[in-house]
Length: 328
Image (cartoon, rainbow, N blue to C red; front, side, top):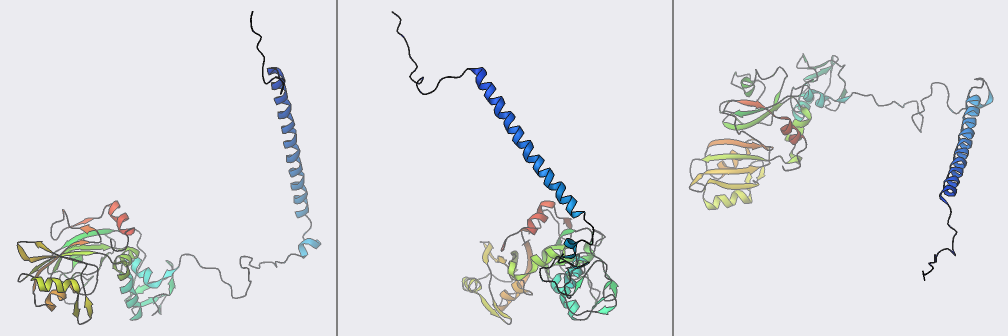
């Protein structure tokens, strides 16, 4: 005999047919659409009433009660007759000079303080004075303009060239080497003395130049030093501890023998930007520096650049320079 099966859940809910389920869904959908239309009709009605109210005559009582007078500025929560909105396109004078490719920002500030700069015919001695591209800015009587195209050039500097834009004594300058590289006016970032060779960067990007030369950023430089005699262990340790020069204590970040068999060859890593600092450290301890070559500056090397030659930086190198971290 076939055993009768029962649905244990039938006592809780009676199963609906598929047709009944579909019909219920349709009714709920129609109800939801009707409610939605009613909400939209109500909003449209309110908007219409508001537009009609704003269209009243200008002399009605509502507009006469407006707290704002005609032509009164409403962008200040504390209205005052001395309020002036900031003027767009202004920058400090020393920054303007740097972006024009005349000098780095700190050097530009000194030029302003020395009275070498005029704006619209007026002598200005405050580096922070605000100027715009429309102003007539002249340095030593020559009108300058903001650089349109940013240029970055890496030179492997040879000896007997001075790091300056021009020399009154007629000596060779590093700009003589790159004079055909670009029509933009570029300047060297930092300095290498006449008898020092190696990596030297040129640009008309004043903001980047300021970043790379400011002491707080501790930009690393690596030098290969050749001495007139082997560096002994005592002096090696003294340099690591620091030496007292005429302008204060001086130390290096890393010191090593470049060739363990030839202790006249020294590698020095340093972040100080003081004048002739590497030479003076060794001279203070009785050594003569026969050759000084900067092999790394801010991560840039002279690899594949012959002495006295140059190349343009790649886009990646420019990005790396602009986003370098402190001490890199």
